[in-house]
Amino acid sequence: MGTRESQESQRAQDAQESNNRAGGSGRRAFLGAAAALGATGTALGLTGTARAADARHGAGQGGKGLASLPVPTIIGHRGASGYRPEHTFGAYELALDLGADIVEAGDLVPTRDGHLVCRHEPEIGGTTDVASHPEFADRRTTKLLDGVPTTGWFTEDFTLAELKTLRATERIPANRPHNTLYDGRWEIPTFEEVLTWQDEQTRARRKQVWIYPELKHPTYFRKLGLGLEERVAKLLRRHGKDGKNAPVILQSFEPTSIQRLNKLVDTPLVVLLSGATTRPWDFVETGDPRTVADLVTRKGLREIAGYAQGIGPTLDLIIPRDANGNLTTPTTLVKDAHAVGLVLHPWTLRNENPFLPANFRKGTDADAYGDVFGAYRTYFATGIDGVFTDQPDTGLLAREEHVNG
Image (cartoon, rainbow, N blue to C red; front, side):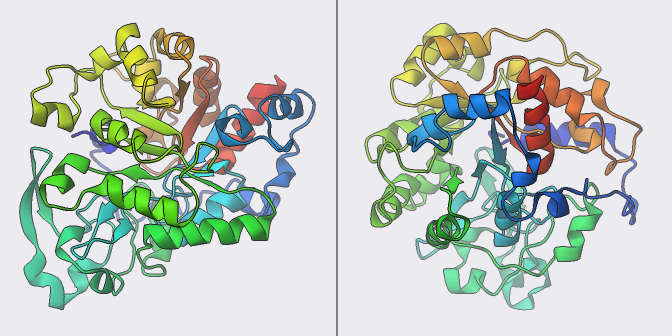
């Protein structure tokens, strides 16, 4: 509830109830992208109108802030998580190698001793090897996370030193059996390590590296005395990345968290939006009756524009799906958001069949690729400003096709 996977995982389950096989398509090629792109991604060779589009948005011309990003912006969702376990430096660096404009380095959750670490959720049973550590067996528990009973191991019950003894694992092995090859290779990064890494990568690659951290479950953690916003702001100030032109975009599903950040930092801010009928958890806690459908009205968007620079809607808010999972007619959300000056970075495009609209799937294998380029063409045609993707190399190729016609 209130996370990107709430809708996506259900579609994957519905489409792939028979995918509990041990193997998978280890046959699938890597699209040849890692070898073709190399460390800088220059092999894409954006030419003609593609370079013109980059110039219009300040890329390579000393532009700063959001205006310096090419459009559509390709955002490596938790890194290159289509190829490596998510939220690891392996995934983050591969996203840069593949040419991502921004790396979503950090779904931020706190430790018991107040450090911020990068995990998709505070429950880490599905993304680390914690279950294989007998010394932590008694930490397994059930908690109410944004109203949902959740069983497992939670970051807030571990010190940072304890979490550093764990190693990351693939979150969706049924869809990405090839990623399990890398289980155990990387530890859990802290947000401060990410900020240092960002500077190191910027120097090494001789181009500004951008990050796009998300604050996870801010209301839940504030009630535990582990408020996220102040911790994030303190670290950004320490690293000189709290200004309006900082190469950092902060995001959250809770509008009040973004409002709080707006008072603490000047970095670009984005409100994430889930399904139209859902309510942000901070609204539930405070008795605010509005749903996401209210937030994407013209009135709601004007309000968001008063404290944020963009929205991160689920792709279904851009183009809804019918009962069979096929795309229907685009909404007016792109036009309405642009009318009040908001950028749109919807989520999440993945190459694998179960995550694509039904009319872009090929076959039924859970880890087989569908017609993702067709999906990109359809979504880019709506005028979105960027997109989160698990396979940044695919996104870059799709953008080249879109810009160059």
